[in-house]
Amino acid sequence: MKAIVLPHYGVHEVLREQDIAEPERKETQVLVEMYATSINPGDYVLRSGAAQHIMPIQFPYVLGTDVAGVVKEVGEKVTSVKPGDRVMGLTPAVGGAYAEYVVVEENALALIPPTLSFQQAGALPAVALPAWQALFHYTQLQPGQRILIHAAAGGVGHIAVQLAKQRGAYVIATARTHNDDFVRRLGADEVIDYSITDFTKAISTAVDIVLDMVNNRTAAVVDLKLGETGRKSYTVLKDGGKFISLVALAIDEHPKVRGIDAQCVHIEPNRDDLRDDLAAIVRGVQEQKLQVHVNGVFPFSAQGINEAYRQSEIDPKRGKLVIQRKVG
Image (tube, rainbow, N blue to C red; front, side, top):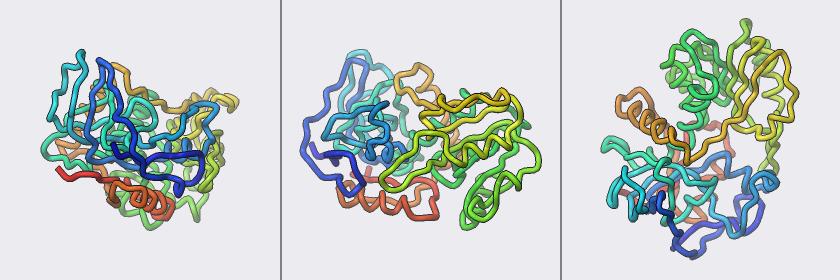
């Protein structure tokens, strides 16, 4: 089958098209024909080699986490989906979706409703699940709490703003001025342009929660430790508040201060409650309470994916960039 592979660590230009064997599924897994996928920040971490001591990979490696498509085969213990179903979900590891066929755990799949396109479905899981679990599992966000969401116009950020507002929180968002209207329409109560304003001086009342998606990186280097934005965020957090990061994989190395609970979100595709979270997200989309913004669609090819990565490095970042292989 056709796949877009990473032959060695490096920048996105090293990706190439290659024929590889179709993946073998286990009895709890589903073989999905991929129609759409997307690019995510985790791809940068793996591709650069910055996380090789935490998540070593074997080359050639297939990147890609989101998958939307049609079920081809199901394992013997799979009961919730059948061949021919339209589904979306996450790969069992951080990677594997840039291929014609993808193996996915049953618990990491949800049926795609008729109202949701493959493009939208291919953009949703890897941003909606971290946002959902960060707010409702890691922090147990409550109505009336104040939350600061960094990179609020990006993939996870624009979903998190919607979910937090629906829960009844007071949402403070950081985003550049050209994304101000976009983030406010999603539900943000305040928007701070971090490029011209020090958010620590703009926030007069301490917040209960910080959700951080800002990584200090260049095109080839990724910092897995708490970055400048994260360190500054501590100054606006209440004593005993919660700092949740999606990028600081080495957050445990940061000393605990003022009773602040600091954690990095980890999505486990085989968790029993993952399917429930995906189903709740799909319901939100069906009820038009939640929307995923697709900011661009690129063809399934090495050139198409490279162009998507180039586009992702250009501001303004807004929503998700989708890789489409097939229209259905």
